[in-house]
Length: 337
Image (cartoon, rainbow, N blue to C red; front, side, top):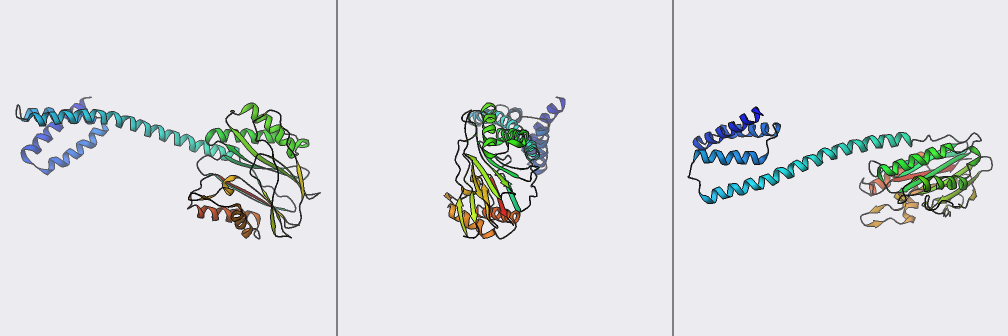
């Protein structure tokens, strides 16, 4: 406290010196005083008050009423300014804390939701998922069973941020806990639906597509819980077909039956699974048409699947000036033999 009082007394001396000599050295010292004032948490109104008192001491009874009133006006303004500055600094500190917490949560999300892209005979797998902000509302997961079947899940939380990440973590660990005899897509979604309905906030829903590839029968079984439709690329016919699968989003009702479909996979055919961050890519206020999206995907399908998804992502990233409007997740499964 003594150092603060000393600094304020020093201000009186500096002001008196400058008014009497008009020496610019005093101005430099005033700048140093300002820096010290910040360190000692001296408020702006305190400085204005000392300034007024110093003028009264230097010019007793000589300060015009208008000047005196204007200084009082300035003092009141600085009181409000000081309070606003304190609030702003508090908000900045709180924002910094929140950003740090979000960064930690984002790293935890990457760890908790990490999945290994398996090696399955006859299938080339490519997958990419890029969040639009710190926390992703998208999720994908591969399940390689001992019978060489490949389970693939892709999901999107209607809601973002840390609650979405926690919901996705619950989904992943629920899936990992299911026994191998319950790996059929319809059974997976029905079980997950009960988990979500019981444990997730009523205002948060999850869309999911789950597919199961069987290398022995060369078939792909699938079911959907309100998720963005994927596409099937027929290599011989050089055409895309929308994967028709409908079902209620997870968490709306406790008991829901999901219809399961199956498709035969031919050589060089591709299964494209995605989230709406791909199909609803925007240029300004315009959404890109689905035909445009498919043309871009088709352009890279001759590449290995992982290269293909990465090139597609880079294309749409550039198209949006490197600023994603939504989380971007794309999976390509290509039949090799």
